[in-house]
Length: 241
Image 1 (cartoon, rainbow, N blue to C red):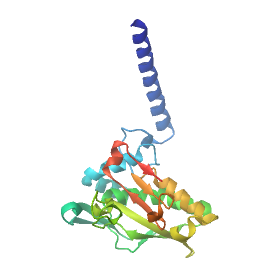
Image 2 (image 1 turned 60 degrees about the vertical axis):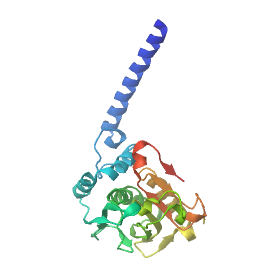
Image 3 (image 1 turned 30 degrees about the vertical axis):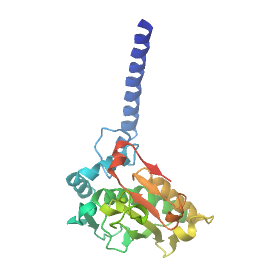
Image 4 (image 1 turned 120 degrees about the vertical axis):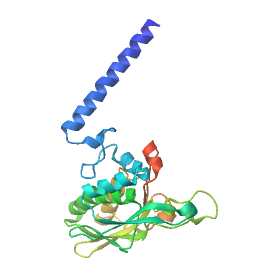
């Protein structure tokens, strides 16, 4: 029994030392989002817990809007919408801003947590990848929409899709600064820079969204990236395929 207690004490000591080292490393490297207890800041580099903190915003609209305000993101809050299983009250429309990526169609109105994740994705993933792969930035993101009052895969029964509460968006492609279009349906499986870029932005999205589904998942996603910010992501369940 004494040996058991000694080993338990050693394990606790090692856990405390390990936590202290991780904390010190994260703060020293300027990566506070690698720590679970630091507050979310959209301007900070993406860390190990950024995605979970973003997912937690599904229950805290004021905090989500404050984070967007602090990051200088302009938007229009749209208030309560829908009804029944498709009722939600945190939708917003991102305002066009000089130097920011535009969305086409421009009328897209995702939930606030999805909008926050999208902005971090633009800043930390999409634009760096475009600059690295193509030597230029993305001018526009093309999409298939956010809100859609339906069940998963359009079935007549079963769970409702995250689209039913605007907690998802389907990304179809990108337009570069020189006008070149990168499309999921055409470029995902073709070797070259376009496919490299698309895979990089998919992989980068996995650290920010609760669920990321690509053409690698199934044929239903052959032409888009499904990005959603479900509350379950705050509890640790995430998918990246």
